[in-house]
Amino acid sequence: MSKKILSVTFALVMVLGMITIPVMAAGGRWGLEDIVFTDTRGNQVTIPGGAKSCATRVVEFIHGAPWTSDPRAMDPQEILGAPDYDKAKDTNYVTLGNNGVIVLEFDVYIYDGPGNDIYVFEIGPDVEATKVEVSNDLVNWIYVGDADGSISGVDMNGKVPADGRYKYVRLTDLVTVRGGSWAGADIDAVAGINVTPYEYSGWVKAELEKAHELNIIPEAFFGVDLIKPITRAEFAAVSVKLYENLTGKKATPASPNPFTDTNDVEVLKAYNIGLMAGTSADKFSPNVLLNREQAVTMLVRALKAAYIPGWTLATDNHFTLNFTQPAKFADNDKISEWAKPSVYFAAANNIIPGTGNNMFSPRATTAAEEAANYASATRELALAIAVRMVDNLKGKPLDYK
Image 1 (cartoon, rainbow, N blue to C red):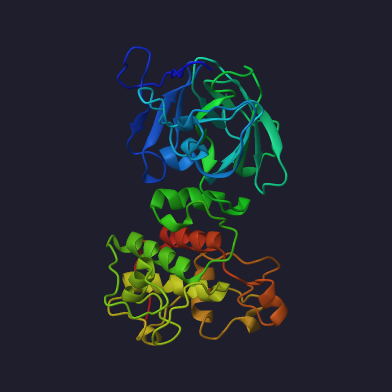
Image 2 (image 1 turned 90 degrees about the horizontal axis):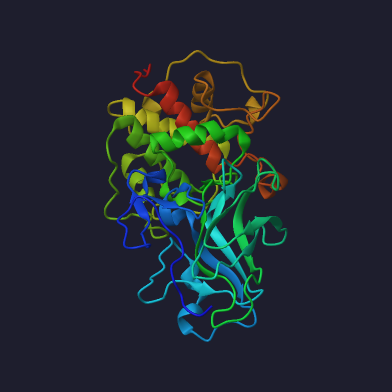
């Protein structure tokens, strides 16, 4: 390629000749600004959450041959983030070289949705195509189509499973133009369009959508696997979000910090409200996993803190919730006595799901169960409980004595 020229047009912004700049649209996904652009076919497209839905890490870059001798086009890190090619300085892109390969990681999961799912922002007067593949483990790759150059989209429909979600994209230059001073496709950015910030189970999809609406998903959960067990620090963040939603008040962190093993602000908020205590006088054990009975009990505390005047963690035993006792779980004998009031209150109010066959699976009781994370509360379970508490109990007076 002999000279770099921006070869694409973005929508809804001030036009300077044939060059325009992406629109930052306020009020976008996840409370972030969306980016709106127009692709080479004239379609107006939105990148949800802006840079959050673009590649965030270069896993591997193997430049092709020939490549380029221009240092401005050699750094693969320039492909990361939102589209930002600087025409005046001819910067903020990477040249792949003929047959060059780049593997990118995303903080979001890309899935097959309406229209194109991935967009490749390629710049320059030569329109150069790339092969596009996706993976979720960097081992098994699925070919999903070719990005034809310029701003080109790829639709994964019919090429990936309906429930597939992918964190990795691999681009391979297809040698549309051989040789030149900038051999191979010149990539400004790669964006996911149909994306979710989480890996999750199918049963919790509706609750996650509601959790977004209620703003009870902690920022720390962005880009994580919600199917995995939840830590005490992560759970503190969920419980604080629930408390703030129920009360309409912002929680403040404890000061000074009583713990020597964490300075997590959400942990200090949960401690200050009385939702969670330390595991010793000066330890919180932020990375310890929670089991199901602990998770339910702690979220019921958030409800008590919100709606029972004078309730504190220290006085919890002075307040008993009144409710119609539901049928006992088949593994009732495994539920700790201190957890039963909260577990059955949650069950009576359709807040906590069982694990099948009328089992609650409250906690691990053997070394083998502990090793297998049996009965561990998951991130998605914590969010589902919080959503159901808001749906079923927000604004309703608690019956207690």
